[in-house]
Length: 294
Length: 294
Image 1: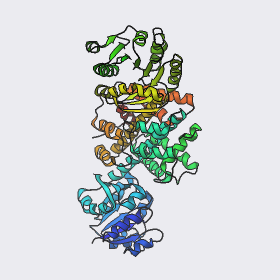
Image 2: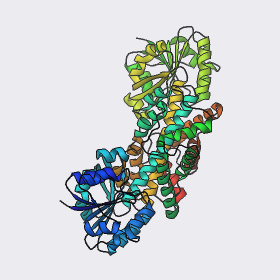
Image 3: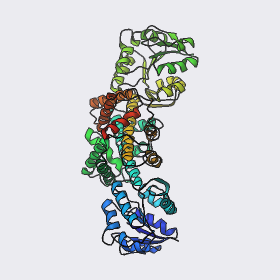
Image 4: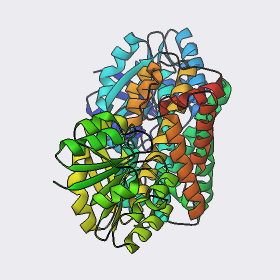
């Protein structure tokens, strides 16, 4: 029975920490607001701040919204760095900047601890069902040490490379997903406006080179007009912003990501921020003054 | 043994007509240049123009480069329309304008004949192996009549809808494929410039929401730097141009297709027109002054 920590108990963190507790681990918990009663009921241990989690736990998982939050949890007043001693493992499962991640890792290493960036994909459904994909940036020893706990929370666990590489893979993933959603949006709006049945077009395309998970799943949502999340427009916008910010710092040009970011901005201007990211189709429809006909 | 015609014997038409001949049909042939000797050797019958093919054959397949060529074959001097009598079937397997296709179909119907638009995907490899995907716009009776011959040339044969809908599906297909190639290009260039191993990033992403045939196949070509076609940049550029031209006429906005068209233009400016369409990655690399590191 390991001593674990979990900081950030939101829509993702609650089920993830829950799986770790139910697997029989001693789990020290902290979050900005109140800790969910269901986690305390099954044996989770409340801590008043991140520092206290760091003192008590040997492997500390973090799942918070963005780079600034991770910085605060690690190095802020009452942060983990004030409580940890040598030999501990800090595992950031949030989706944040790869460039900042490398700096965070270095500072944690300087304290004699290991750092792993381990962002996930699969959303709240994946968190609940313990089917998350986990993309890890870490050294091999640290990865093997934490892997048994990753396996309690997810299914498809990959060591991508050194620190930062997990976050890089996650941003690459979210670039592709956003641009594939945009691609399917353009194709289905075009086909429908041209007079074809979008469902038949989709069916004809699956199997060929246009095949993708996004055509299959998000394309169907666009045809059926079911936009409940899923992954929210606002969160995908945040991740594209992160990709573009890192691209600027790295000197990389991402023309279609930049363009698609503007379409997400338009989506949010129309009040679609809390809807599924397949709502991007509505921005293309608005540009064309036309809605996909079933 | 049916009397068939095949007009347009290029890289696609030769193997397609070859399959029809080998299956035991009487096939009347015409093409702009000289007819391939291999087709005559196995029993193909040479005709001096499209009109003569129209006189002799009951079902006439067309496989030529673009809309103007189809117009000439159908309605030009010595075109099919000068030779056909009522009850024949005209099957255009080229990738051309859906809007013009609808007009061509109407004119052919007015002559008492059926028209089918039946563009294919799968390239020269699919043509050789008789594994083409065929997207058909036609009425049901015409589709059922021609279907046995489609099955000699392809595998995945879909009646998408009425005339024009086959071409619409094909353009929707090529929009998605181009934008997915662009998406994978941006993601892999970003990941590599950020310092991650692009192969490991690709492997980590396959299985999640970023999964696509393009990530799998074209992404691998980008990593391995193998750009032999496959589907050529110049032909994909032609198809995007067709999509944008039809979008303009229909009043549909395709922002990322327009953007990606410019990247193909840049690719061709760099002499990549005869290379595989996954060469698009080189335009992204050029914008970023950086080549993907294996």
